[in-house]
Length: 256
Image (cartoon, rainbow, N blue to C red):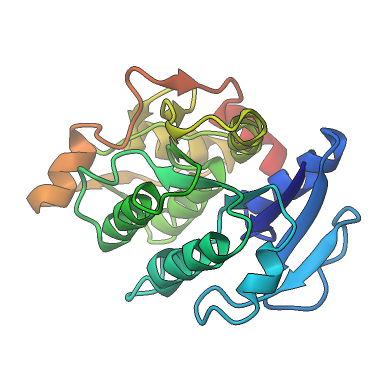
């Protein structure tokens, strides 16, 4: 298959781009740049801008599938996640209508974070597109939890949101799952995918502090409202879906 990857230089996308050639696929990466960073495998660069739609029609020409990973949680207007998805759908509809596989977030329909709402709205755009599509929701990547723990450990006393449950998952395993779904052209919402263990973020912070050999104390800060309740109830975790095998403990050791 010839597969186009959006967000191919990001945390998840770069795993997909590295795994696809080994699985025998031709790979193109959609980027606003004309070259890829050093260390990427041989693949085609398709220069386009999801936010404006410029170059997208040419970018999707001749591909059998698109794995859509491009995302930017810091954009208040969700330019990439909503407008970018809308533009990508329009380009694929006007062309050969390749299969579209999208990565989303477990609990995006239950926790009212603006970014989560944008992911849910993007899901709906895809479901209503008339294209052949797949959506996989995953829990938080190891990389994301590590950044959160690192930030929370910066004050004199480590701070975490009280009672929040997290189930970190290896982004390489998520990449493999997305590739398998795309190869089989499995349609619709696929079973949610999470890490092998769910724990309170306070426990993850204690593990992190021990790994970096810090003796800092720990404060659990209450988070009121529906957002806090959603995380305390574990709505961002997988209870009946599929689970990966790579642990956060292994990731921490490798990251040191």
